[in-house]
Amino acid sequence: MDDPFVVAGQTLASRLIIGTGGAASLDVVDRILTASHASLCTVAMRRVDTGTTGSIFDVIDRHGVRVLPNTAGCRTAAEAVTTAQIAREALETDWIKLEVIADERTLLPDPVELLEAAARLVALGFQVFPYTNDDPVLARRLQQTGCVAVMPLGAPIGTGLGIANRHNIELIVGEAQVPVILDAGIGTASDAALAMELGCDAVLLASAVTRAQDPERMAAAMAAAVHAGRLARLAGRIPRRHHAQASSPTDRMAAL
Amino acid sequence: MIVTINGEDRDVRAGASVDELVAELTSAPRGIAVVVDGTVVPRSEWCSHMLTGRESVEVITAVQGG
Image 1: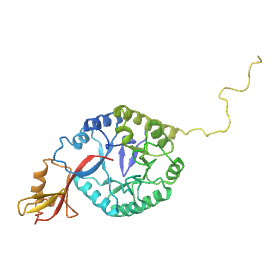
Image 2 (image 1 turned 90 degrees about the vertical axis):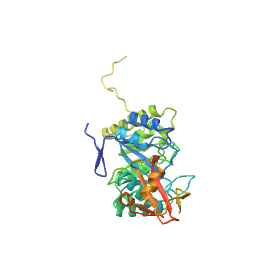
Image 3 (image 1 turned 30 degrees about the vertical axis):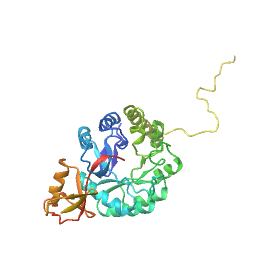
Image 4 (image 1 turned 135 degrees about the horizontal axis):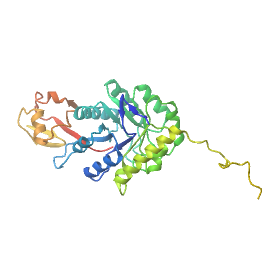
């Protein structure tokens, strides 16, 4: 079935985007990328650690996946803009997952700083993928700013609570002019399937796989779930009903 | 002269370039960005960008995350 996922002018083979954070080792990342068939994965920008051996680049190269650097940990628009510039210089990509969080307890996006950072990064020529609240109005404003996608959270990062407000996600999908990528909150496969059934174009997850008891198997589960959810969305689900509706014929019943 | 590199004061050769400084820290051929006093120094300027001392330098790469 021809169902390409196009974002920022690029066609990606998979609608599952893997966050590499939280994996116990690069070997685990390697196996997750194999099992998930992901074609895009996120990385964070941090100080060079002279004590480490091996590099995330080795794994990324081996799989031929595109890289989406993030601005994780940034609290202000200024920090996020500089971090995006660092990522562009280091990784030679204009793509940036924009995260501007408000506090460590919730890790929720700070909408004021987020919108400001998005505007500045778009002006600097970045392809901006903003991690945003599940707020339809903010999602609209981010699109108007020129972001190439919107990435609403299902629930706060790392909580595994699934999609806390599916109505808001549906509202965002309903008026989106750019791809909607459900980002954060996914706990298990059914959450990812639901995101796709609600009409999201893709799912980005990290902890649900990297911190699962068997990350490799969960990566395969997520790939299947995203695929199933996408098919179900395209197929068109039946409407919900209050009362039962027989599926066997109700006429020509035998007189018993 | 003293330069702060990734939060640590280091004694480096007077007039050292950004390129020399990076080479001392890592042998990674790519995936590195350098920030001097808050401004990203493009790779094309690493050889010509000389340090004068007292700068704060961040040498950044990609790691697992997100």
